[in-house]
Image (cartoon, rainbow, N blue to C red; front, side, top):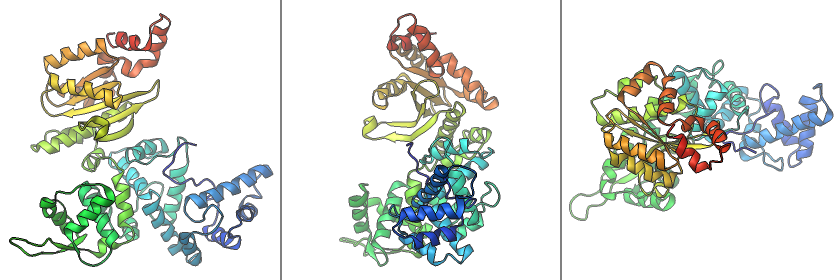
Length: 470
């Protein structure tokens, strides 16, 4: 079965069952899942105009949905969360609020809300196909054709998070989480060190702790090393300003003691750490706000006087361009043992014709031969078949000659998208296809090329080499 980060909910839906009643059935038949299935079938599916086998299947699906949503375990016993819901089953609004909060915090419901919000902010309508791609970019997967988001939306609508259709009710979301979407976006923008430090401090609970000891715990627990000399500036002060920690200054001078740090009520709420863990799986936090903008708005951001802002805008633009040709997002700023310590801005994959991996590098200056040579070398580690260099600067003549050489020698497609190319694509997004076909035809047309060349007894590597010279 295809992996899913969203819970399976088929037939465990407010449009098909009553939450209070299935909780009562679960309590009545606790630890007897067969009796629970039978009770659900009699209550909700016996009148369906279908076979007895299908009625049992529908009841089984409902039971599996209750398991996936954390209401019962696989033996049919109410979980602690399910027991909590059972105790308040007669309080409709509170019942749905508790389930809604659980979905948001523990079942990637917040990521679903963010995906919807990102689509709406970029001017796109919301449907399951677009949601699947956006959620994938947030590190959340569900099977192609799966109803997982739709059923989750129905439960969140009962909790008041969605008003009508996919419209997000932000005040209600804030009420359930104790944090606004803008506050959550701020947490998303925290550095890895800041997020990890918060989790370690939350694990310690209330009370004052030496700041360097918390950092040591974070390193031991999560494997992230801190620069203790810069800990106040890089971690403590920003977290204090955001309202998540309180600091008491230690002694000064020789042998000075470190800060004492304690968590605020904002940090010790039950929802913050699970939210941080959701956010840690998502696309680079600095880029995500830009992805909510239109192509025109991103292009305007490319003119920012701030070099860092221009770099982020260029990365967001590259992200948008890869979406246009329906590639699947894999990773942002891939770095580490997988790339020998070098950094690749974006990795995408395509499988519409045959599998291909695309390696995207963003550049705000002139692209040199050395820049391209580094990307070619990295393909041996990333297993990429396509290199796309997106730049607001020029592409040097030596880099272009080297690209021609590589296209003739290796099974790699190389594309440059320079300043004029980007302007053309922004004016007419479909021009991205012409630009890619002109520079690397096999990047989009591999299947047809391989089929043609196979009839002439070419092997795969020869097919790629010949095709890239077409």
